[in-house]
Length: 120
Image (cartoon, rainbow, N blue to C red):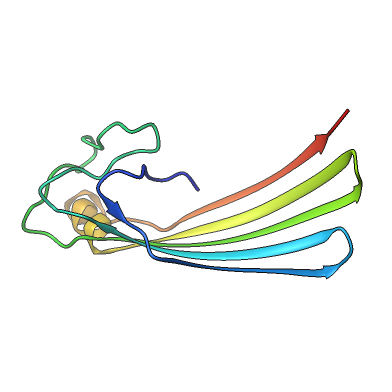
């Protein structure tokens, strides 16, 4: 979902891919995110530190930032054409929940996309 940058983060993950029929692949990925240290920021995908809306260095708070589940289906009916659709859900963790508890609370996030690719 590109919710975070690969700075100050630990990310163990599992990935499962299956190809049930010719030209179709389905992948499921699970990620869990922790701040490597609560003495540093939680970074955005553009590598800038999150400093607004309650974000910041919370050295006394929890380090678990959340979990993400992604499902992606890719279909290639011909060599020159591919279509892909995906769904992602981000489950907030204690760092995000603690960050927003005085601002009305945090919420999970959903992301859906579809794209087509033509090769020539």
